Structure formats: structure tokens, C-alpha cells
Image 1 (cartoon, rainbow, N blue to C red):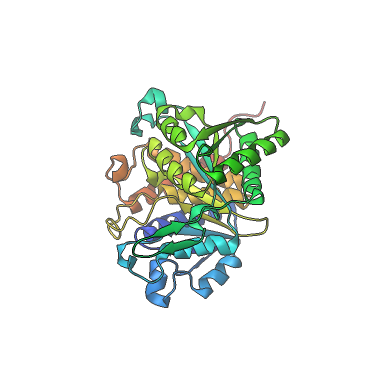
Image 2: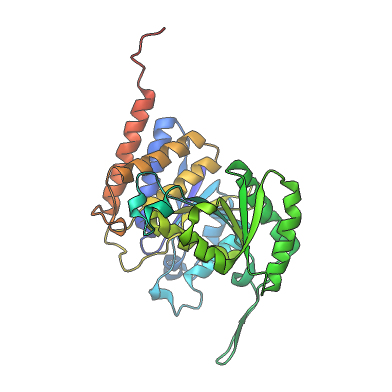
Length: 359
């Protein structure tokens, strides 16, 4: 399977290197045929090619089985004709990656890392399903010295296709879906709520409720366990998932997947930014990148290997290896080494013959 790697900018190359090392270890141990093809993307691509998404990178992504991305952006390119983030928006649009899934959970035993009280945080396990190629980010824009506007537009088919993803995800989890909108103010949200409500008749086994986005923002920090799956539009999903990420201790731990129509390569990336203030210092938390790699393995049909990698990441944190954002002292590379060690131990345990006598 051909994996296109887009290391990107800032800490992106550092965390991407760790994730690829973990994937290579899993592939070697379990006989997976994974090939990694690195390409310029984001700010580094602007510097080298004058374009955040060069044609060669786009072509490679379209021909890949999956795409693994680090991070893009930084103040260096604030005045560039095309910012690095525009390359990411263009890639999502070109591949039709309309469904962004961002899982966030409290790892049992690590409740103390949450800024929330343990009795509030314990048991939180939420999946945000975010519509990714509509809304304000992709609407028509205008900007002058005195006026600016961003068009937020959604159609019924756009809402239906992301809602189907969210209902199916809730059905496979705990059977509860919360649709988040601002239907008391926004016309797009009124349509959103109407379409999601109509579609719920096809999923009688999923309990649906609705929340305004401001109420949802409060509930995430006061009662996160009330949520199972959150369905929402592009801007709201971006903000709420970043808020939700903090309850586990750090935004550095969260991965994500972005997918489109069947047969389209999916994109996997941590939800954090490029953190240019610590780039090149070996201080970044690669946990979110490793979590994204595990999501990728699952998407490619390697569920057992995905679970192995997720368990190794959890064990690394539980055994005390943590980067500075989690109050620890481990470097990015040290964290990766610890995950590889946990992987090796887990693989050895699985492959070790049982010493118990046959009955």
C-alpha cells in the first residue's frame, strides 16, 4: 500500500518521522506491505515550488492508498500570496474529503492530566464528525479596506452525506448523536437541523438530540460524558474539537481522519498546528501523529494492527513517558522510542507460545 507522507512545516517533520517509524515497525512485525512516499506540502512547498500544493504533490496524493500529514503553516508565510493553509483547503477540496472524524477520550488512569475535575472528566469518550469542505471556509469571500464578507452556504445533499456518516458512527458506538448548530440565528443551521431530523427516521436505534453551538461549548467542559458522537458543520467542528482535545490533557494527543467518496484516498493528521515556537527543538508531542497513523491502519483494513499501535501509545503515557505539554520531560524522539519499545513488548507477548499445559 502506497502511503504519501506530507511532513509539512514546523514540528510536522519531527512528529511525522516518529509516526512513520512506528508504522514501519508494525508493518515489519505483521507482514504488512507499506511503502512511504514523501512530498513537499505547505510552507516548505511555497519556498521550494512557489505553491503550497504543487502539482506533483497533488498527483501523488490522488494516486495514494492513504495520506499521512504532519502540520502546515507559520508566521514566515503570513504575507505570502498563498498561505500554507490554502494548500490544505485545496487538497481537501480536490479529493472531496468532506468527512472529518476527530476522536477524543480520557485514557483510563490519566484522568489527572485533564484540566477538568476527575469526576467530570472520567469516562469522557467523544467522536466529533465535522463537515469539512463547506461552510465559511469554502464560501465566496470579499475583502477591502473597509468591508469584508465570508459566505456560509450548505445544501441538503452536503448535510445528508455527513449526517449519514455521523449516524453510522453513533450506531457503531453507544447509539447517541448530538447535532450542533445555531438554528436560532443562522439560516444554514435551520436547514441543517431540519435535514438531520428528517434523516434520523432511518436510524431508529440512534438517539438524536440538538444543541446550539454555544450550549455545546459549555457542556463539553461541564459534562463531557453526555456526548457520544457530535455532528456539526465546518467552523463549529473546528472550534469544538480543539476545545474537546484539551480535556484529555493536550491537543498534542489527538489524531483525525478526513475521507470522501469510496475509493478516494483518505487523509490522516493530528489536529494540532505547526507550533513554530518549538520547531526543531525535539520537544513536540508525537502522540496525535501516532494516533492518526493508527486511524490510518484501521481505515486500510488492519484493525488488529491499529489496536496494537493505540495500545502502545496508551501504555507509553501510562508508564510515565510524557512530553512537556503533559508535564513531562521526554523529547519527541524519546517518546517515539518508548512507543516502539511498548510495541515490541506487545508483539513479543502475542507471539510467545503459551507455557500452559494442554487440558
